[in-house]
Every structure is written in C-alpha cells, then in structure tokens.
Image (tube, rainbow, N blue to C red; front, side):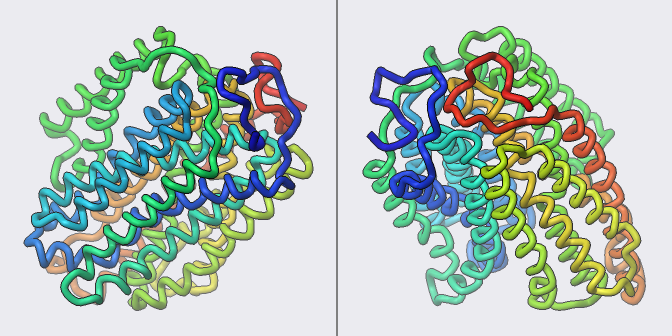
Amino acid sequence: MPSGFTRPGRLSTRPRASPGLRDRRTWVQIGVLILVQFVGMMSGTIIATALPAITQEIDGTTLHYTWMFVTTALASAVTTPLWGRLGDIFDAKVVLQWSLGFYTAGALLCGLAPTADLLIAARVIQGIGIGGHIALTQALAARLVVPRQRAQVNGVMAVSQIVATVSGPLAGALLVGIPTIGWRLCFLVGVPVAVTAAIIVQIVLPSATAPARGRVDHLGAILLVVGLTGLLGWISFVGDELPLLAPTSLLWIGASALVLAAAAWWEWRAQDAIVPLRALAGRVPALAAVASLCVGVSLFGGTIFVTQYLQLGRGLDALTAGILLMPMAAATFVCALLVGRLSTRSGRIRRYLLTGVALILLGNAAMIPLTPSTPLWWVVVASSLVGGGLGMTVTNLVLVAQNATRLRDTGAVSGTIIFCRTLGSTVGLAVFGAIVASRVPSAEAVEPAALPALYAQGASMVFLVATGISLVALVAVVLLPSITLRSTADLDAPSPVVG
C-alpha cells in the first residue's frame, strides 16, 4: 500500500509514524499533485496577455474584459471550502478527478466560445474546477505526509505556484501570436494536460477511506455560495461602477451580510458542516485564518501595483518592469524552499512565520516613500523583501492550521484558510485600485507631465495601507503558540502539539 494511506475501511485515527519522504512513491504522488496545482495556477495568468486580442475578436467590452478575470476568481474562491469538505466526506482522489473534469469542460468551452458572454460563463465552470485543485491538492498532501515533512513539500508546491504565475503570461503571449486560433489555444492547451493529470491521478494516487463520515451539508453549501458570491461580487463592482454609499450598494452588501450570518449560525450547529467553525474556533486555526487574510492582501498587490508604478510612474516598458520584478520571484522561490527544509529538520515553524510576516511588513513600509525619482534598486530590494516573506508564509499558514486540526476536518480547514487568503487578495485589489483611482483622475483632466507623480502618490498610499494590514498579520502570528509540527498523521489529543 502506498505511503500515507490505509486500506479502505481501515483508516486509523491513531497517530502513526511518518511515512517518510525518502520513499520514491511518495514524491511521485506529490509530483502529481503539483502537476494539478500547476494547471490551475497557470490558467489564471495565461490569458493576461491575450485579453486584448480576445475582446477585439469576439466584440467584447471593457466590462467583459474585467469579468473574464473576475468570474474565474469568484468561482474559485467561493467553491474552495466546498471542495475541501467534499474531500473529507468522500474519497479525495475521486473528488479531485471531478474537479479536473469541471476544469476540462470549462477550458474546452472557453476555447470554443463564439461570444464574450458564453466565454465568461465557461470561465465560471473553469473556476469551479480550479477551486477544487487548490483545496484538494493541499488536503491530499496532508494524507500523504505528516505535518513535519509537509513543510518541505509546501516549499516545492510554492515554487510550482511561482513558476506557473510567472510563465503564464509569457506562454499566453507566445500562443496568441499563432494565426486564426491563437488566443483559443490559451484555453485549449490546458485540456490535454488536465486529462493526462486525471489519468495519472487514477494510476498513482491510492484510494482511501474518507476521514470524515456523514452527509453533505446542502443548506450550508447553498448559504455559503450565495453569501460569498454576493460579497465578492460587491467587492468587484464597488467603486466607479457602484458608489460605496449608493442605496443599491448598501442593499447588496446588507443582503450578503445577512446570508453569511445565517450561514455562520447554521455551520456552527450543523453536524456535517461545510466549514467546521468549531474546528476553526481553536486558537491556532483562527489566528492562521486572520494572518492568511492579511497576507493575501500583499499576494498580488506587490506585483500589480509595483508594476503599475514602474510603468506609469516611471515610464518603463512592460519588459523592463517584468525584469525588475524577477528578484522578487527569486526571493519567493529561495525562501519557500529554504523554510520548507529547515522546518522539516527542526519541526519548528513559528519563527519562520514571524520572519516572513516581518519581511512583508518591512517591504511594504519601504515602498511608502515612493516618488518618480526613487532609486530603482530601492524598489527591487523592497519588492524582494515582500516576495521572500510571501515564500515563508503563504503555504505554511495552511500547514499550521492543518497541524492543529484532526484528519477528518483537514480538507475543510485547508480550503477555508486558502479562501481567507483569496478573499484578502480580492479585497486588497479592489481597495488598492480604488485608492489609485482616487489619486489619479482621468488622463484628459491633468497634464501628462503630472501623471507620474500622481501614480507614485497612489502607489505610496497603497503600500501605506498594505503596511497597516501587514502589521495585523504580524500581531496574529505573534499570538500563535510555539508550535512543533507533529510527526503523526492525526492528532492524539484535541489540542495541537506545542513546544
């Protein structure tokens, strides 16, 4: 029997010895999960350079342009906790294959879509599948290796995310240049990869008895989907298209808040909750959720608004701006791998989380005094600090919550922590975009020579807010106990192992 699993019907809840990362089969299984994760992550960025060609060919509008991104992010974020819980109740391997099926169907429909509206609808289906990739790869990794060794696995997974994120726009730029079907290949190229991944999952990953028993919480799922879709949809629209204090805006957010309150009330009492709030109410998972929410704000803000500053505030071209961000990606890469190995060796992780959040805080603070004449080396160093901090924290906050959670709730808790990170990045982008828009009027309203200074001021305000939010993340991590990553598959007591 492959490591990390027991025979169906005989899953033990007693702590077990580590299955060991020296086993080649374990690394092959982890490699399959990384492939699935890579497919989902790349699909989110590969269309970035193809969007102008897409909207031009199928007569899309500016709103269509935005929603080709937003709908996928919404569908992925909303369904991540649901997929995680389904992986707890049923065989997570089979559930992962279902998510690959959703992704494949969505990608195929995107590549064949004749209109912008149909393309956006297909992107929703694709986003549902991506939500499963995000949650279930983490949940299955939790079954394959124990938390102490999972730190090293998380480092490798973080590297995969970086490669997918960085290579996606480049791959899209190459594919969109192919005559006739160029931009459609940005979607269709994922179809054979996803099908291949589903086949390899069937061959390589073993089946396992679900750690949680019970039925699907349908009411909780409906309330969560409706409430979260309303909240994230409001965040996407509020601003220029929907004034914050407009009656429609207040009614929208009020209704979403009521539905989410009802969902929280139900999930606290439900025996088979989609989001096990009682498990999240523990000190470690709750603080990890808060920290993940705050760290998520810097996840995309660093790259997007640093790039905007370099291009619009400094007049650099896209290629030069991309090259200047490469040290940030390299810092994320190195820190993720290094912390993974050190955490596996020592079993301690809180010190690295503290260091990581402190680096994010320092990097954001260093970019507060941005001006059109700030030395470029300063921007590179500051963004690299943020990148290094993200490499230390993003996946390890999920690991900390898993370490304090029983195996039967691992999928749901992992999905919820990841959702908090996604929510933070979504809210951060909306808020930061509104800040820049408030500082920079339309180009026709000001002299072109004044625009660089205005964009620099907007970026400065963005990183001032990001610094304050990073400080909240630091407080949350400081309040964590001194955690020792356990070397058993499940908790041997209701509380986490602490040292």
